[in-house]
Image (spheres, rainbow, N blue to C red):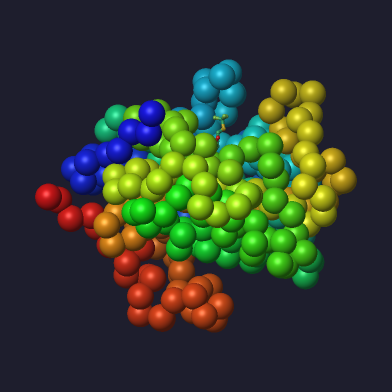
Length: 280
Ligand code: MF3
Ligand code: CO
């Protein structure tokens, strides 16, 4: 069953989601060569707890940390550690979830550490663009598989590949609700998108082949061919006027990425995606 949220509930979801966005904005400043992934985790946990919220991942099926921090060929679910230091040229995916006022927010960004290779920069750009194109596909009356179709088309047109083993998800009072949101497949299938649905859309994209495996720690997913992998995630509400990006960061410029691709008038997306839902 897909739980639709009322406009009032979506307003309430703002708190957890804005906190998650603020954690990622703050972590961007801390990400540099020499910092440990354990330090990043402690910093995120302090921000979340300081805001009166709870880390959503910690304890989830026994997951031991606040963040998932996944470096280079690590796709998702990397476990933070004081012993793992970031190195210039790395790409680092940071996934964060928080519970506040009874609702969960979930978002991820892959950051460059200092200067990165051209291939790495392309992967980050293509993965983020694929998330934005997926969000553009979110409209009442559309279908869940339109999202994955938008991701896959853009990713493969740019010579990268989509991870199949992990999917996005509905989100609300629980972190993982129905429906599942794959990042691949044909359009026009699956449940119809309706006002009040809230989805965590999270493309995971590899520079090489799509296959992944999970390390012996039981969590860390890595690419089988050791190619670089990136992950961008937003929690998005389906509103009458289109998508509403609950985890939008203040420093994020949707139009800058979408307008050059001819995807949106430069005055449109930025305002629409950030607009508060109207209470009915
Ligand atoms: N964003 C991830 C997800 O939606 C984070 C889950 S990590 C876990 O599945 F440890 F909590 F499983
Ligand atoms: Co998620």
